[in-house]
Image 1: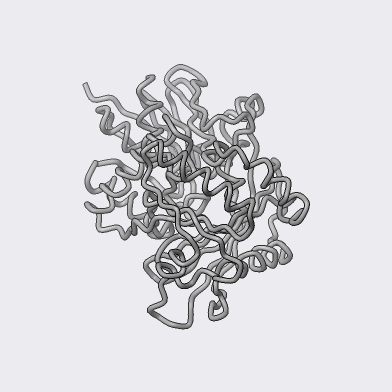
Image 2: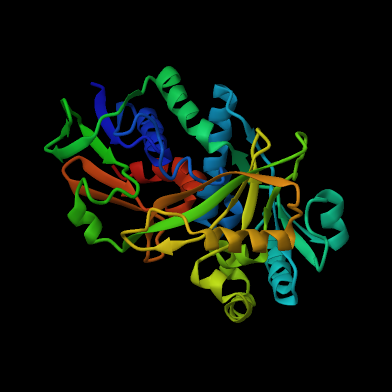
Length: 374
């Protein structure tokens, strides 16, 4: 007999969970309170980012998720670009860390190159050459256009895997395999709650017991005046070396952090590191900042965006970029160092959450992994 499953939430975690459940033999329905996904899953760089994941399980999950992204995109006609990434160095401490990471990543079998200044400028002329020492190139990163890719995946799941999605329906309560919405009660053999940064509605006591918070970030989107402008890869400044777990392997990283605390205290205190991705429309997505807490000011701070742009100018030529959009996003973030949490909250009901800023990178494969425990 076919079992029925309900997934609450149609962001990337919910979509990935629904896909994985289907391949486990469930008939799946997704219930999403908004008319479309409008949360963190579309308010991001569109980066599928294995370079940021440490060796071992997390990197393997990132690479598996990347494969699934590309498999779905090829079948559904979703744009993606395996653009790779570069992390630039403009001072000696950054350059030392990048050289250390190159040796470490190379020993792990990752697709990386160490580029000197001439090599960077020859391949990526939009990188600012002034004071540039070199860069770490990685070939594993993929860009998608999140605003279009997420709804396109939802359409694909419905048309190809027979997953039903009901948008515009809030789930008010879950109990005894029953899911209560604003106008109907559904029964399911299994319920997976993928409610992102919404801790307050379903099982709030569970979230209160977790080492979990919310992260607010600010981002911007630009277009170049030339319609054929192309940066060629995703560009990252040195501050990004302090952000991702994989970079903690560099022995000299603490020395670099101390330099940033001394020279860039406003950036450190606001959790700013600066990256640029480019999508199929030629748009350049830039960010971001990181502020943690359960309640955030809903308004963007002009000073944060000014700091981001000031730092961006240090490693990228942006004189002909025109601002198109600004926004903020919020995602759930575990504070205990875990990559996610998956917990049974009552019989046949589970919460899957806490992937932090790595939802685009890890959701597909992590969903497959956690569902193996059921």
